[in-house]
Image 1 (cartoon, one colour):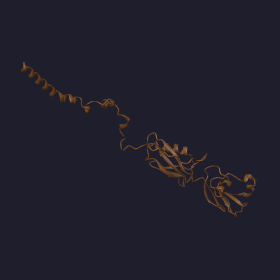
Image 2 (cartoon, rainbow, N blue to C red; image 1 turned 120 degrees about the horizontal axis):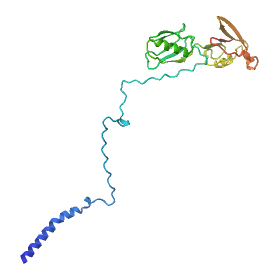
Image 3 (cartoon, rainbow, N blue to C red; image 1 turned 45 degrees about the vertical axis):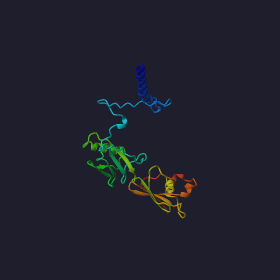
Image 4 (cartoon, one colour; image 1 turned 30 degrees about the horizontal axis):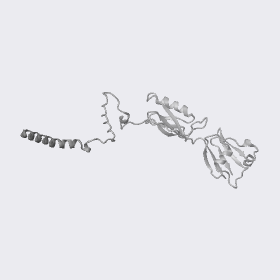
Length: 241
């Protein structure tokens, strides 16, 4: 009996010794989750591959080919006055939509003609911009299908008046709007100190004949004989002695 009891006691000791380390490891704080620690976020799902034949998201849309050229939109020129007729030395842009090789910046020659690629000579003087557009489109239709033409006025050098003599800024001025003699004198910086204000003259050529129109600056300043303050015409020259 004593031997049996001794064997059972030895077996119990062995079981306790072997189970102790495993129990200690299971109770180690490092292996236990912190009571107040937030739960880890779930892993993000892997992006699904694009469906066969579907479109890509906007951020990865394919770019335009490197060689593609954007259509140039014609820039705006100056606004011509009402009733404007194209004249010599005016500068125009003739623009063909989607055909830049046919487009050109041109100056109206003294003979009233302009030169355009392929079309060659076109009469521009004496036409409105709309009339010139229609004429160019008609001529271009011989070479290209359904031409779309725009005429942009860049400079108006044919509608000029001149002032000379005793003013502060003599020279040529473009008639972009109705302009009277007094307004031209103002544009020219006013009269100089020794100007003969009663003897101003407007030279005008009509039907090949030149006439002299008198202008009394003092009268107009004093609101007398206001009919002298006429509207100037292209080519007029105001002389201030």
